[in-house]
Image (cartoon, rainbow over all chains, first blue to last red; front, top):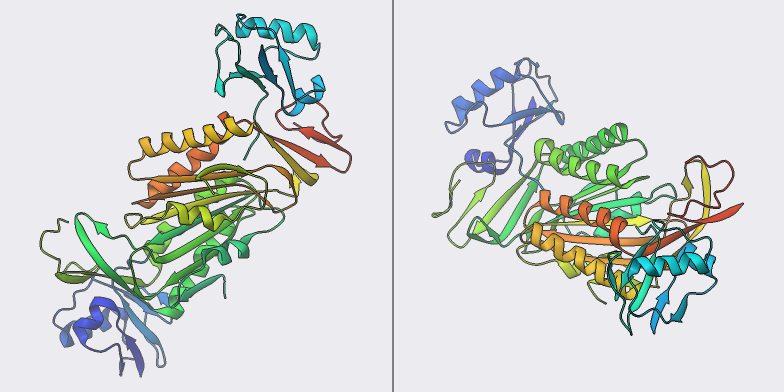
Length: 77
Length: 77
Length: 146
Length: 146
């Protein structure tokens, strides 16, 4: 299992801040396909994905135990 | 009479921080001539002159009661 | 307190300036970002900040490392507050010390630009007639041009 | 305290930041100039600052006016300390508030550059083997290159 985190506007779209999903072995790009199927408001490019607190590439492969986060455009400061 | 003020290195050259002098009617340029005669270490261009707390031009004329200061290169900050 | 942190209470900026001061520092610059009441004619009631805390602290520390490598002799501390913030509250503080002043200004400005690029923190503006996650293009209040 | 002043006691920088904060300010920059121990390989024991106080305060206020005219919406406070200062002591503080951050950085840096041009304040460096009024080219310590 991997744990998925949602923040800010994305969290309001999913209605959850965190969920456990069985996506080990999939790429980040495949994660996006999965997320857009489940949450129709999601759009690729509307967020970056972080794996274990580092920004990930679309081709990166998820492993069991990974902590994955959807990072919408940041607006700190 | 006008009052003359000396600061920093210039004060060490004159040995006084302030003196009253009878130079009303003279220009700032003439003040410099007077000062260089009295204090051989003085050199035109080694300081600016302020009259009543504003930087003065060489052609400005001193009036009785003026407060005049020799301002060596500043180094605040 | 840590040199790079997300906090939930009011920020005391001087504490971060003290953290970067050293005998070889001739200059310290401090930036504080405050909640502003008016933005483009729309009045903000308050703000709510959210962060992905562990990653945000890691990215703040990364910005500090980038600066200390790029500008020799600098030292950096950054804190960002999350939760509900009222008008004039400090959202972020950046303190940079350096032997010379030019560097202290440049490095400080670099830090705020990088925070706005890579640190997972989000701001929600709350107005009288609506609210919006900034960065999200939905739910604009009427009358705001963008 | 005044927004533009020469002081003889330790400077509390936060007091000047507080002085410039307003609801319309989104950014406050603060610069503090500190006594640095080492300059070009020469160790400073302490510094002595002297000012032509009434003119210096007038010129600091003039710099504030220049900034508030050039950068709309800014507010400025500046204090400079005189007398004997030890390593790491604050010699000068500049606080600038502005609606936006870019301006707050630019205006703050402008202030320190102008202080070094027009404000009648002088610094004497005291080393183990000598002393010098900075700006005066005499009595350099041996070993210092300039």
